[in-house]
Length: 175
Image (cartoon, rainbow, N blue to C red):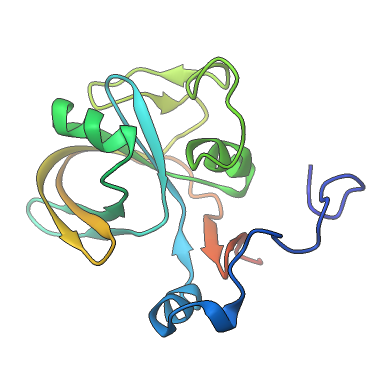
């Protein structure tokens, strides 16, 4: 269902969103930067939607991300020491909302949708591109936890348009 379809929205805006004039200048700046929406999963299983993700090329390559240190995902990641990172597409909006805690997940986060088990964490069966990562370090940065991981495995399939987070909403690239 797209936002243009009848019944797709109840409100034209998020009724719980903090008004712009009440946000800190740093939060307003961050909101003006488009960010890729990714799903991080770990054995356990646990998962979290992460839109503050950066991939650094090198030998070895690395993934950096800002996550909530009070999340169930962080507890599971600390224990497992590894995770899968999946870039999401516009078709994955509901999956992103479910793992962000914005949508109900009857039966649990990994119920339905079809999952492929990997040594790093479950990956949506529809995902052709993902990375297997080993946790290297973490530290508090601002109000988040900066996680740095070494990329140990990369699967790349077709490159569909990415799902982006911009100004508090999901977007996709035109064209």
